[in-house]
Image (cartoon, rainbow, N blue to C red):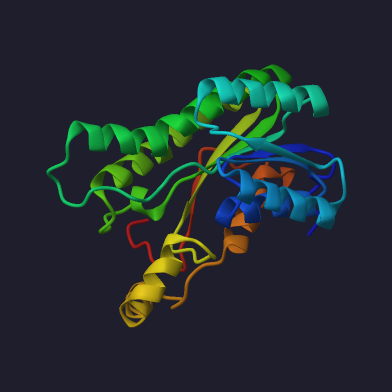
Length: 258
């Protein structure tokens, strides 16, 4: 499907591998110029090289740094504006599902999880919003998790941070709607990709993990990064022009509370 994104400019944070990489590839396939980011130079360079070979020169920008830091965010946005003139679509794919188990957590555990899974995304979104609201156009998609919309066995601090991210996106959508900027959130379920957490768990406890998937996911399989990417790119397009403040769950039917 042609989503009408050709010629637009997208920034996908955390896009050197996994879900973020699939999202960046989907934007490029739709004809966007796309900035990708990552903290691992080798992984980022490999992804940038792959994309350049696949989609041609001049359409990929690699930002090698931590896009949760305000100074890095500001430099990245200036670089995009200088080279490509504007930013139309932002995807905040920021976070990490690790955390201490149980409920007896230190303040440092909570602060670390919220820094990784909430504050970083808020800084990035806030940095991009000034330009988008001034242009009276733009789309932002935040990547949350099903742990933020119902009870799971995920670490408490991680789940709480993702729940806060979902609420932030919904309320932010109300605030910036009059400026014609749309804010949406995607909550993926169990997504399997090379180098990801589920791949490691499968290698160590294959039967147990597959039994969990069969028992808890009605489609009885893992999701693919491309399935999340297609949803994100659709939400970023004019085909979704009346959708804002939404949290779309993509989990094979696992979530029961919505």
